[in-house]
Image (cartoon, rainbow, N blue to C red):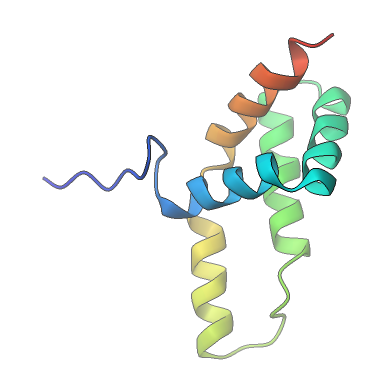
Length: 92
């Protein structure tokens, strides 16, 4: 059995999304605000999943769109939402 985790995250895709959230000031502030609005981590995970889908720059069909959609669907939004919740809800 192989270990497919990446830097402590479920996978590379989850790690990469978390990295961008934490290192891009605009995205960071956006998710700080969204975390404050969310009722719980499940709602926050749904918000993150929807955000990833809405911001997908490839809205056509084809090889690259399929690959990008596969990567987006591999993101563990629940894992990231738990980290956001821990980071931003403790600030209250």
